[in-house]
Image (cartoon, rainbow, N blue to C red):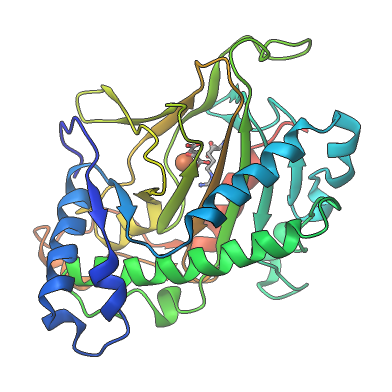
Length: 330
Ligand SMILES: N=C(N)NCCCC[C@H](N)C(=O)O
Ligand SMILES: O=C(O)CCC(=O)C(=O)O
Ligand SMILES: [Fe+2]
């Protein structure tokens, strides 16, 4: 349940990661302490910073520099990996092409999704079938990004084992049929600074990304150092800055975890405004359930919320495809 939070806590997850595949992890004092912090953060704001995550700072920086260089390329060059319905909505989208609640967003991006083979998820998955569109230069772009996805996937799985304990379940509650074969989304995003945002044909607004909630289980945001831009809405309607803290991820929970927890944890509204003169980049990784998972409130969470079911059952892939198909003006 979101509250009147004024700041976003920092959680050192190292003790959780050290024990996250140990069958006795729930009894470990270090793990318990992280679990308590995760529970409090998820209840109060649905947002927290993660440090002690083990992903090298050099890689966090490298992926941001790779995409900064890509966005500096001439428009024609970027169009070589253009996102279209034919590419399964994978690839490059220009400034203003992504729309949030009817308003074009002032960002450009490369959208990537876990690969889907034709027919893998039937008619529901069909619009997103395809493999990712990577820039040809530098030649290691794809390899570095895939390494990043691998490390973020593993980190997210471990954090979710902590969150499963925080909800009162066993560590593997969010695996198996729910998220044992997790889908993932990655957005490589660029937000122009205030001075160069208003080129021709560009919408007259400075919202980098309008207020939204994320769709899945857990998001790991690797944001640019030095440019505060991400804001999170508290229950009073105030926008609280998630200022960059170098070396950390900003984590937040998505719609699917809200449903599973029957609202004990909420997916909190957030938005991005780059008011600085500098171009801002961000690598957002979204850890999702199985594409075909049917998600409904966990029994243990229903019991803790007076037994009423607050959210209808949802199939993750349908939720994602509905969002993707309405996110673009093409
Ligand atoms: N995969 C995720 N979560 N992407 C978040 C993008 C949010 C903006 C999008 N136009 C929207 O309105 O949802
Ligand atoms: O740019 C950011 O800091 C966050 C972006 C975001 O919220 C998203 O892509 O879902
Ligand atoms: Fe988001």
